[in-house]
Structures are given as C-alpha cells and as structure tokens.
Length: 154
Image 1: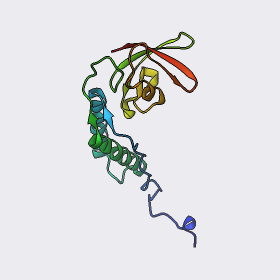
Image 2: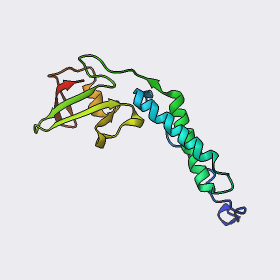
Image 3: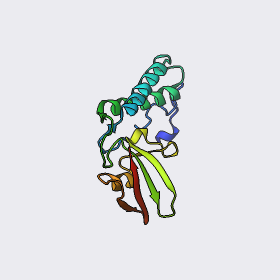
C-alpha cells in the first residue's frame, strides 16, 4: 500500500522532517553588528524552543528547531571582520556611488545574513559589491550594463 494512504500516528503531522535551510557556500564574514544579530537570533530561538514542549505544537517545534540549526551553524562559522578603515572599498565599508542617471546611492557592504538593501546594506557577494571591492574614489564599475562611479568611501 502506498505511504500516502497510511494513517499518521495521533498528532503525527508531517512537520517533523522540515528540510534544513540552505547554508551559503561563501565564507560567513560578519560585521560586529551582524554577529550580534546572529547571537540574538540564536538566543531568541533557544528561548522559544525551551518554552515549547514537543507535544504542544509539532509545526512550531519543527520550524523553531530548523531555524535554530541554521542560526547556530551561521554563528559557529562566523568570521568577524572588524571596523573598516582605508581608501579602497572592502567588507564593512560604507560606499556612495553615482549611477549613470546621476542618482546617488549609499550602502554598506556586509555579510549575507545581515544584508538588507531597503535599509542600505548589501551582501559582500552581491554583484555590485564584488565589482566595487578593491576600487577607490573616482573609479567606475559596470554591473548589469549600469555604470557606477565611487564618490565616497567611509
């Protein structure tokens, strides 16, 4: 008989085997703020999980366990990069660019888990960040047929 027609044990929803969240193959560089965010997320998930018995809500337990495995792995693989200083773009830098249409954009280059473009931060593996890395004020890069000139690095 097909497994699809076998009755689940009492309360045995199919939430027990949620697939793990994919973990990037890139080095897990983090800023001090990014590491603090990861540590806070691990603590939050541990607290929620400890207050939940596995029999209460299996869906919540499965989701929290999966997320805790992800954030614990990210915490364990984190490589802290201290504050940025210098005159070339690198991880942790805040960069201002002018686009070909004279639009000015400022963002900080951060780790994958802390990147939030709407809040002004992009991942160091993003195409624009990769193109800008190692460049200085006045340099121009082209990404996806768009030109960007670096006007400030902090």
